[in-house]
Length: 176
Image 1: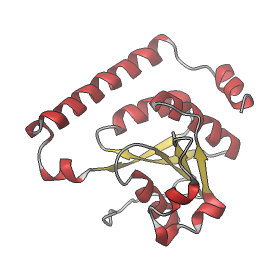
Image 2 (image 1 turned 60 degrees about the vertical axis):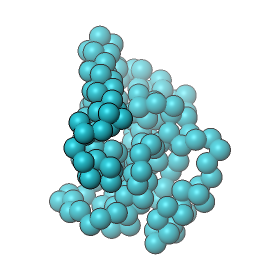
Image 3 (image 1 turned 45 degrees about the horizontal axis):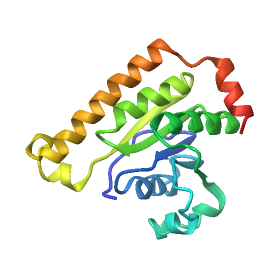
Image 4 (image 1 turned 45 degrees about the vertical axis):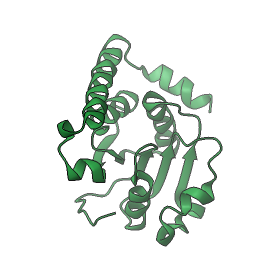
């Protein structure tokens, strides 16, 4: 992770799995003391904690005390639900959100829908490919960004038509 400043601390850090270096960046932020705990959400059931700890060996000892792994979430909406359960369980009121820059707007919408009372601090991760060339220069990257934008719009529509309620959040939390 290149050294990037983050001006504020949060109660905790959340990393939805996916793009390159998200987990490593989250561990580095945790190692800097910018949050008390880290949730890695959407981890494949077959992935072992030791494999994740190797992504940032300088901060691997943090896994023993301060890293939680969610294997239930299967998509961004699931990440938001599981993060909401985790944040309520720990009493967190602010989260640093570490995800790909192109994914950040949708993640913030989903997390905000699941946890309207939690402050979200974005920490976008920019891939080397997006850093090297504009997104529109590569058909593959342009498709990725366009698809993500459609998913972002759909998340807004879904949350407007079927907003989460406090009762459904409590029911979800109690089922865990």
